[in-house]
Image (tube, rainbow, N blue to C red; front, side):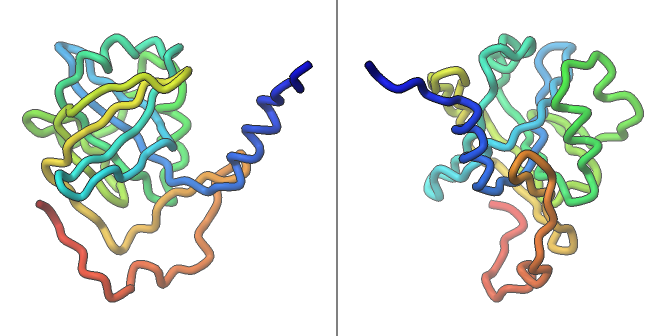
Length: 174
């Protein structure tokens, strides 16, 4: 008899790996979409590809599957409220938020630590999630803002605030 797989213990183990917190946005028809994710990764430098995943149970998933472009907003450490707002199925997620909207991508949230504007590249099956791959068309970083981090089931602060002053060159766009 195979041992029972403990999903809660698995989730707790995954919580040992700190992740950044992002809100992915898009516009599909008349709908403005936004969802909180912590499953954001770089995939390729050439071409510049990133990926994120969305739960198959998300009510907005059919619209996300139609999206031809999206914006990945890497939240800054003082944006936990936005993370909470976009993690729920609310009809008024956008109320009171003055976003920058560009042609061909989703809204850019004010105060983000970094922003990636992406064109749809591919969607793949990933168990109980779908994996969305986007080709980065442009990006912007804000070195004076620290990213929001999630670890062990809660938001966390980065202890080393000097990370943004490393000597690696940062580009503002491709």
